[in-house]
Image (cartoon, rainbow, N blue to C red; front, side):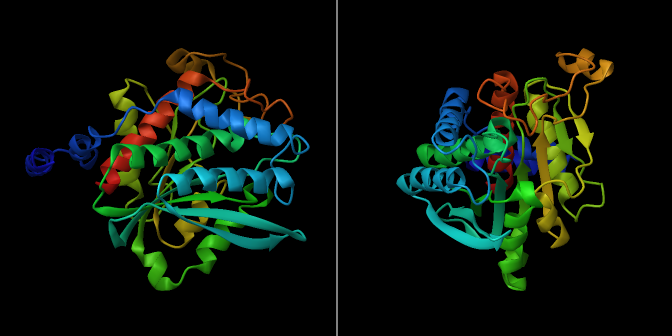
Length: 311
């Protein structure tokens, strides 16, 4: 660890970019086994199958998903709590998990929504981000990672109904609590079947520090030799509440209902003229609706970014 810190300091002195300077710390990040992520997705599919075919807000499949993720985190030594809120006459739930240790005044947070639409099980949207964040969290514990910053994860409810869960969480924080969160990374749809490799545009009206997160995520993909494009996600996902609170935000995305262009197909493979996810918000968003390579690459980039940001 001393060697890595010294090397990072030397790179900063010689004018290396912030993303490059973060790379030595990120070398300690584990390779995330995509089979483990797929196993979590299989569990979400099974939960949906047993609960009317979906994991939507106010439906039993959503609460079953919360309880299952919570059980995995509790067993790994995280401190978890379930925050409830009400929307549309139904109770919704956020799951918050804190990794032990780290500077409580310097929090790095990762999140993604756990709910699906009522039409289907929501395996790509957003089982992928939820399952990957879970596996990254479990690998923190398995590898004995000791970050200097405090790490917190969030699985949000009712995103599909207007970002209700993440908004409720941020609204519940005091000004002092919000000021302690220095970075929020959002992962929503990371295994689209006709994938693109998009990174949130940190300069798109986002708070200070967002560009640094963007560059760190880009650097993670660069280690895999995967070209990326910036995407302006605006208020479309759960990072929005954090950005409005002045918290630096970033994230990755593999595409939804938009059509892949010919140029993007040349760059990334896949099919031009076809949606990144033809099953977006449909019943066919099952475990068959996943590109394993995209899922694997994003999992490794998420770990890269977390280790580099929190170390």
